[in-house]
Structure formats: structure tokens, C-alpha cells
Image 1 (tube, helix red, strand yellow):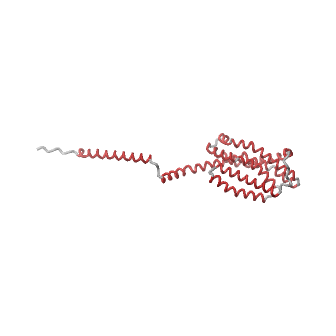
Image 2 (tube, helix red, strand yellow):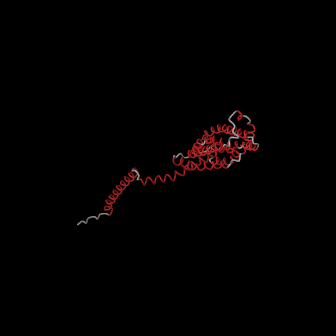
Image 3 (spheres, one colour):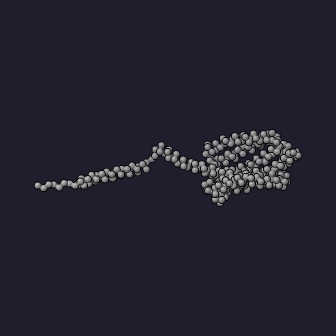
Length: 283
């Protein structure tokens, strides 16, 4: 009798191997289908919230940093080209008003106030045109494009502040040289207290961002201007020195300019050393 030839182990393993391979392929296909479905399905609210939080952690600080950098750059540019010039020129009237008050030349006190206001308003016009082209100037200086855009937005909304300060600075000096300081302090304190809710209203409630900060600053100076004008009118402090606007306010500028120009240069040099450091940080 012939004994049957025993089967080799590989003959038993090959069908099992093929079966397992087909199972693995089927599982891989199911896994691929599940992954594709996971990619194309709508996220759940909790998943969407987590994604928003993750994006916010990255983009939030970047956006805030850009606005802060733009605001700092804009304030530095405004101080160099505008506020320092206005403040320096206004200080030229202080010795004239002090001497006029001491000599009881009340008309000279009023005329000096009018001349200084006209000087500052005429100076603010070319400065405002420079501010309108701030983005181009900063780009030419090599500043970052996004930060330059933020700074441009801030300074555009700050242009009215130049004209308010052109009247505020002389009014402060006009009152200070007459030893009227306490009402000036009260008016400044009220305008500063109103500045906080103004910022909240414009920046948080109306979501105006950096433009809202600039508008709040302008609004605060407008409040101070209205308060000072109201005090001067209702207290009658202007009666002795008031001079009706006439051609006289266009004469006698030599004494004012002789004091205003050197004072302006001194103030500008003092301010510019600090502000140039901010401007150079973005290069």
C-alpha cells in the first residue's frame, strides 16, 4: 500500500495568510473611509469652540501687538512733527502775557492771545497735510507695512486734535499768567474723568479699535476746550483783556516770533530725543 504523502505546513498556512491579508485590506478600507468621513463632516460645537480658542491664542496677541505698536509709532510721529511744535510755539506768549499782566496792559494780553492762536492754527495746516501722508513717509523710512497702516489710521483721526490744541495751549497760558490755576485744574480733571467712559464707549461698545482711541483723545480735548471757554465766559475773567478781532492782531508779530521760535526749537529738541528712539525701533 502506498502511504499518502503528508501535506507541508505551508499548504495549510497559505489559505490562512490569504484570509488575513483580505481582512487587513478590508480593515484598511474601512479606516480610510472613516478618516475621510471625519475630514468632511461638520465639527461639533465643542470642537469648533476649541478651534476658535486655539486660533485666538495665536492671532489675538499678534493683533493686539500690531495695534499697540501702531499706536506707539503714531504718537511718536505726532509728537515729533506736531505736538512738540505747537507746544513750543505757544510757550513764546508766556513771557509777553506775564509782563502785560504785571504792567496791567490788559489789551496787550488779549492781543497776544489772538496772535498766538492765529500762529498755531496756521502752523497746524501744513502739519495736518504731513499727517495725511504718514503711511507713505513711514514706508519710505522702512517701517512695517501693517504697523504703518495702524499708525496712519490713528493719526488721521487725530488731526482735529491739532486745531483744538492750537486754542487750548494759549488759553491755558492766558489763565496761568493771571494766576488762575485752580479752575484750570478742575476743568482738566473733569475732562480726564470723562476720558475713561469715552474710551469704553468707542473702543469696546462701538468696536472702533485704534480709531476709537484717537477719537476719544480728540473728544477729551474738545471737552476741556468747552469747559475752559465756559469758565472764561461765565466768570467774566475776559472782560478786562478782551479785544474784538481786528487788523491789530495781524501786526506786531516780531516780538512774539522772537520768543516763540527759539522756545519751539528748545522744546522740540527735548521731545525728539525720546521719540526718535521709538521711531527707530521699527527699522
